[in-house]
Amino acid sequence: MKRIIITGGAGFIGSHVVREFVTNYPDVQIINLDALTYAGNLENLKDIEDKENYTFVKADITDAVHIQAVFEQYQPDGVIHLAAESHVDRSITNPTAFVMTNVIGTVNMLNSAKSIWQDDFTGKRFHHVSTDEVYGTLGETGLFQEDTAYDPHSPYSASKASSDHFVRAYHDTYGLPVVITNCSNNYGPNHFPEKLIPLCIHNILNNKPLPIYGDGKFTRDWLFVVDHARAIDMVFHRGQNGQSYNVGGFNEWKNIDLVQELCKQMDEKLGREVGTAEKLITFVKDRPGHDLRYAIDATKINKELGYQPSVTFEEGLSKTIDWFLANEDWLANVTSGDYQKYYDTQYDK
Ligand code: NAD
Ligand code: DAU
Image (cartoon, rainbow, N blue to C red; front, top):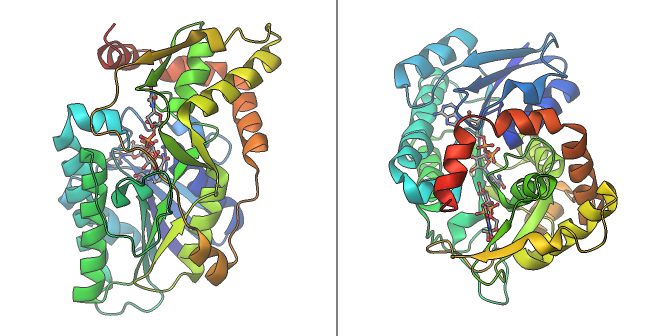
């Protein structure tokens, strides 16, 4: 039986990737390696946790000795590496945590893969899941291509850029069979409510202000999380060694327009008077170093692998809101405890 270690599988995107692989590849053992930080939640995988081809291992990727032991025990044929500190605002308050997990943790993963594979790389693959934020910011026009120069601005994107460079260096220096995907903003079920869309859903449900940074004209390119998981599946299996693939939905929204659309759909679904949620919109001080615009050119993955998103933004947003409305317990659980402390500090309460 083949074995794949997926790191960060208890997080937002990782849980969808684990589900995609456990469901589509019953003959492959999927090992979900996760430290269960504030962002990791095994509830995200309740529906598949009893499957025979699924195993959970609690491990911290900053602990090189433990990671090496997990590799020796499970002898994986493949690695899909998602574990990371992922929130830009947290990286501004505590950059070191991002260097530890995103840079050192990635190097530990590369070292372990290299050490157990180096005699024979045949049939092996290390897939590093990265972000479009490594490219920095666009002006009003243009798209990020795979050969756009890296120009990260936040401690988060600098740590992800650094990890991408290490992954490439292990390919070029040691021949490690790697692929990298750089994806745009994801949204969907299980999204942690520190990020814009789930934070606004949570606040609308609780009649709390919707904090919009700066003038709200910052632009992001949104992709439904299940479509990101499908792209990872394609690139992991059919991408070319040593190559990067941009993943996106050709779906740009200015933050203020997106939040207004969300407000409209929430009012409808909650049976509230039109305009109720929109009254909660509050402009707050801007994020330092805030990138103006991200937009992905996903032509390469489309041409080489036939990838295209399966869900329109309208459908995806509607499905996302429905999921949060049907899972208010999940939302209540993840917003208890430390979340409140984080929220009060971040939004100056
Ligand atoms: P997330 O914060 O929801 O989940 C991160 C997961 O990693 C959690 O389960 C957490 O417990 C685990 N983790 C954190 N530190 C760890 C450590 N030291 N050891 C082991 N596990 C650890 O993140 P996400 O939004 O699902 O993002 C997953 C990956 O995708 C990240 O690498 C991120 O950079 C990348 N990405 C995210 C987006 C997005 O829009 N969210 C877009 C493009 C790329
Ligand atoms: O582009 C991919 C990246 O998308 C991923 O690599 C990151 O892991 C992921 O967190 C996301 O980063 P962003 O910073 O773009 O996502 P966030 O949801 O934090 O913010 C989206 C936009 O909304 C951004 O312009 C900042 C703004 N924003 C965010 C929050 C949390 C607000 O205006 N108010 C807020 O309260």
